[in-house]
Image (cartoon, rainbow, N blue to C red; front, top):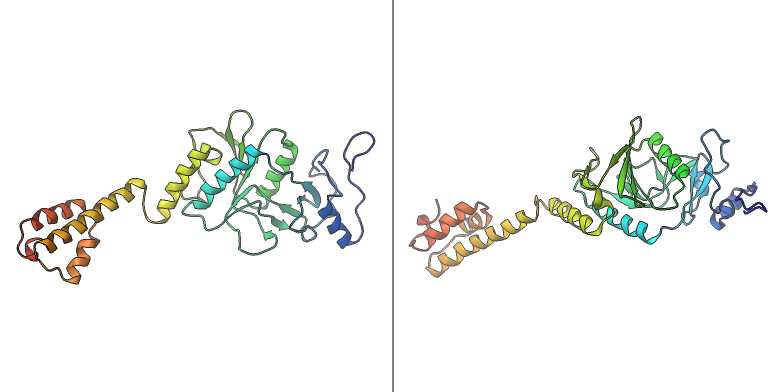
Length: 288
């Protein structure tokens, strides 16, 4: 509610839990808060179970915190980062704006959450091991600091803050450690959460995100990289060529030997079989 002096203030909260839920849904408590409640402020009146899923509010120690819609640059960067992190071979679940409630008076929704995202409705108990926040111009730094503190104090291992305004960079926040600044060209690591290091720029640049995602997806299918896929294609082609040449020369190939030829992934062996097949009269002159 905006007072005559132009400042935004809380309206008195209703006594009825249902009325309080309705107020949160309608946005009656906070427009854009004039400041984020500090940790020495009085405990807020709200609880996570009172916040409906369609609400735009998080809670910090019972105080509602409005989550504003994202601008275009923020939204595009968020989508790029989500693609990279969700595709990592070690990640079984990731979410965008997933709501976590580590305690009854706290509800936090990182821009990206990695790990611990169940396929179920409702707020998620606990916190994610890795959380990512995207920050553009106009960010309320006090609100951001409280959100990071809430997540880390509840058990989040790492919070990556992707700064989009000014020189692009990523802040790495860990509980009990100094904040580290990571720049484009450097790699972010999340031991125990991610298998692969993440290039800083892959969290916000489309092309870098696509390259990192492709590498992740190939590894999920057992390939180290794209060259390994190309190599397998060439290997399969040589195996088929051996069988084709043997058939052309009228040499029968039993099922067991055919399977062995097709299963071979050693280029040198396949090349040797191919040369032998060109002049062989019997199968035992080709295979060892």
